[in-house]
Length: 266
Figure 1 (cartoon, rainbow, N blue to C red):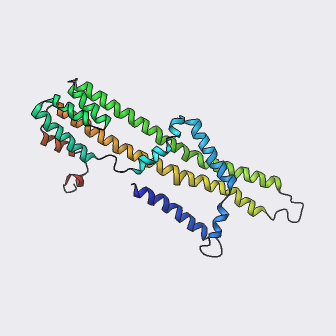
Figure 2: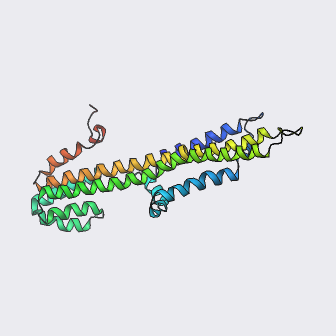
Figure 3: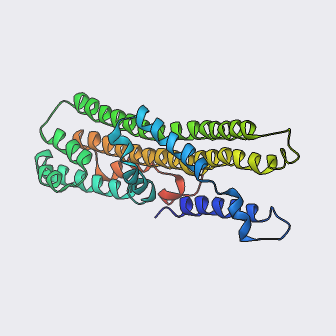
């Protein structure tokens, strides 16, 4: 569970709500929240933003938002230390019984990338070609992940714009309905202006409290996945070259932070 994401987003909403409730003459009056609710503003901001995302990205990607949320919430999905231990074990098997003995271990592997890497060296393919295939897989996968994060960047950029559009719509309607010739023609300007500005608030909230954190978290998951894949590539290439398991462990641990190696920080 991604606790920092939950704390950050929920905390931001709570602080904003508390700030709203302090806007009146009384402190923390729930009635103040009603001043910031407007159905038309929500409809314009959220509706237009979603439509732009649908128009800008494949529908399969847009409808995968629940899957994206699940990915960013799972901080334990990638475990580089476990991968290092698996690679050291594979190196031990390969030194004792040869590369062909790794086929059984490869068939047991649940990670498709890890399994593919093992099978490539079991088939005795050229080392340079194996590395090219694996690195291309990493590059293409990371590119797809960046496209997904870019969708949320797009939402973060267009949401404030449509918030401003909603504000302009509200201001136009307010000016059109004003009758300055009557005695009370300007009495509702403050209320109408407040309603118009609410849409801008919704756009900012959607951009910086929803889309922005999601994009950042997805990029963080991508970095974690790339790290694990790079460890796999380095480990598999070393196993194919006949590396000593103990040396392999030390080599792969250089991908980790000093404190994760059990060493004193440099």
